[in-house]
Image 1 (cartoon, one colour):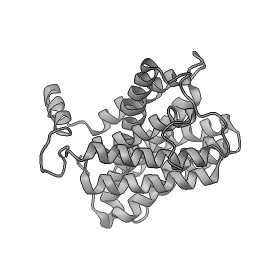
Image 2 (tube, rainbow, N blue to C red; image 1 turned 180 degrees about the vertical axis):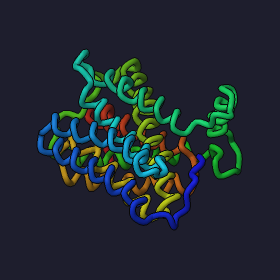
Image 3 (spheres, one colour; image 1 turned 90 degrees about the vertical axis):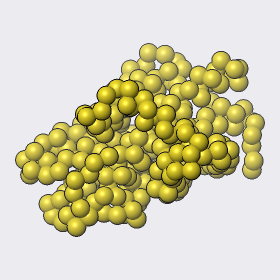
Image 4 (cartoon, rainbow, N blue to C red; image 1 turned 30 degrees about the horizontal axis):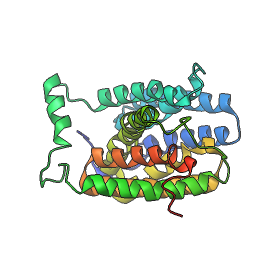
Length: 278
């Protein structure tokens, strides 16, 4: 990803590219936390508009604004999604599909041909010793981390939500559907937004430490719909872990798999009383 500005550029008005959209997201999620869905949608829509207009008016680099606007777009799509099916699992591809498309358009290299993107995608799963390759131990490592984190998250969420099942039964068909949605839409979609785009662009501006904190706070805010401060603190912690893993491995596939499988276990086996560790 090409980021054409240096860390020394974080001074007003450049700092506005973090302060304004981050603040608008915080306001929108605070409204959602208090049950004001319309106000939350309006705040996020305004953030998208500001993130388009301000870089043009102030002649700023738009990369950070774009990253935060993608976060708000995710919330707007979520709040605007009509209830067309009682199985909420089927809503998620309609939310994360557009997010993945917009994310791709943000980071695409216009000099590449379509087949070159297929080659780049395959690179994530290559068994190579390189930092960006897919190492053999990533799969068991991801599954272990996902199971442990899912158990902790299940304990936290069970304090406010009595039933976390997203599928009616543990049949092969429902499990396959849930895994596909959670890994290839939710896990991949959120990791593209928060790690691959937001964290990477913030890191080019403010360094790894500040980028991890800002990204993790934003990620925690985006879980305000659960109306649990304890849960948001947990989400902040798991985001820090995923951010560190991504920074060290540069593997989007690894963090997306951990994220997706965490959600898979959380909304399938654990609510049915299986795979409980604690």
